[in-house]
Structures are given as C-alpha cells and as structure tokens.
Image 1 (cartoon, helix red, strand yellow):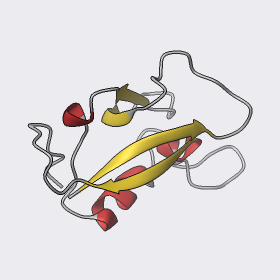
Image 2 (cartoon, rainbow, N blue to C red; image 1 turned 60 degrees about the horizontal axis):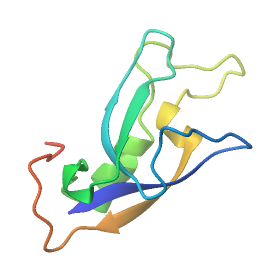
Image 3 (cartoon, rainbow, N blue to C red; image 1 turned 120 degrees about the horizontal axis):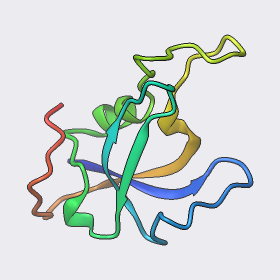
Length: 99
C-alpha cells in the first residue's frame, strides 16, 4: 500500500493552505484543467493506493477537461506538486483509493 506525501509545489510558489507535513486526501478534475487537490496533515486520512505504480499513475494522470496544455504537452495537474511515495505497512485508513 502506498500514499502520496507532499514535498513542495514545483517552482517558486508557496501555498499556505498546505500543511508542512501533508498527504494527498483527494483530487478532482476541474473545468479549467488545473484540478483541485486536498491535502491533509493526518496521514490516516490520506488516499491509499494498492501499489506504488497505481499511486504514481494517479499522480501522473491527465486532466480529462483540458488534456493538452497550451505548449502541446500533456496536462498533468498533480505533477505541479513535488511528492514522495510512502509505503503504508501497518497503517489503518478508511480512505482507500479503490484503484
């Protein structure tokens, strides 16, 4: 089992709404293609993926509303965040990603 832990936002940006230690709790695509990620300071509220590969694929998913950026590259909203993938052996959570 794997969770996605926030490290930083790519580039010189800071989001004061993301706790210092944070895990991805949810993500939804938005009409503008940027998506909306919700981060939690409680690791037990993090999305849990069955494997590293499924967590990685989730992080790299393309927007369904705006799949291509203006520069012609794939629009992958979650890759705006630098993350680490952590194993969850022994964790208890009711937030399985169901991948």
